[in-house]
Image: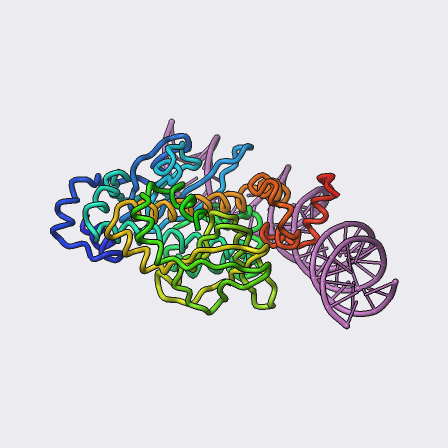
Length: 191
Length: 191
DNA sequence: ATCGCGCCTTAACATATGTTAAGAGCCTCA
DNA sequence: TGAGGCTCTTAACATATGTTAAGGCGCGAT
């Protein structure tokens, strides 16, 4: 749970006093690889900060195929914005890929913290800003890059951790099939 | 400028007193069709709320080709998150497509408003939440939908205004070429 | 009025990615 | 130890989209 404070302080200068009084609002939990954190059609009111491990967001399309919306490293978070904003059900699932540790806080509690304390307000704003930056990079990748270039960008972003992600998950994340990724890896001389 | 208040109040219950004291922070401007609002490599410190018209965000790739990152209707906004967050230059251009009216406020001024007033804080949060929701839908569209389905989603989102957007801009927005869009429209019986 | 210039369409061909199916390698569990 | 299941690779073929080039159409400027 010391990890969580590090993550928070990377975004905003929350003091140890502010942290101690907020700590009871967080729930700490360990997950095994492959556990579902929340499902599509749930209404998760919490933000789950990932303090260790790798996880993913995924959609399931009409034919039942999975598509990875996002891959998440330690420092990232799991939440359903449409639930906390408009009360809708989550349009996607979230799941661990490796074993993971998380710290969850109710979105409403985080709003309350931010309404009474400027450091927590800054923290929440930075969470949104980082989310927007991440999505912006992904949008640009889909518009400007080929599948191979998107794969190279994934390798650069995840570095040594990239080997922890099964290739079929990487392919789903890149918006291609496992067969296409295999072909690309062969062309790149990785096989 | 009354339009701006309507847009703001759709997101948060800012009172007329709060609005009157904030109004001097906004700059109001009219644009002709095709004018650049800010360029890649600028460092725009303002958020430009679009009160009338249609505009676009676009990237220019290495070969000099344009790709539309986003199309914006009245109620939307133009800003460079990486500039206001990390001081980087904007990675994209913004430009009007039709004639437009905007109201611009410095991001720093908006932060100050939000630090001293909960309605403005709510407004800023809602701006981010809506941005995140919009990007989420777009991300899902690239992962789950064919080009034709993305075109149908665009038509549904822009409704009658869709005819104001030149087809080559729509194509760039969908991540395909004008030739492909023409083919798709023919298959759909629109030509 | 007409010339030139964008924008759109169409066609022919090229390329990237999807689909299906088969098989190899590896792990787990009975 | 062997069977089953999961992941990854490979191949052959299908389809969607890109590329290039040509022509039509409308519109604004001269």
